[in-house]
Image (cartoon, rainbow, N blue to C red; front, side, top):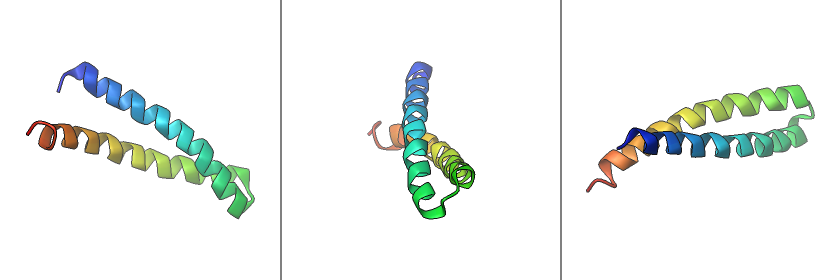
Length: 67
C-alpha cells in the first residue's frame, strides 16, 4: 500500500477517535459523574483502540483487499 494511503487511513482513524472521545466522555460522565475521570478513561480506551484499528486497517488492506 502506498504511504500516502496509509497516512489517509491514520488521519481518518484519528478524526473518528476524537469524535469518539467526546461521545465516550459524555457517556462515562453520565455514569461516573466526574469529568476528569471520565475524560481519562475515554482517552485510555480510545488510544488503545486507535492503535489496534490502525494495525487492523493495514492487515485488512494487505490480506483481504489484495486478493
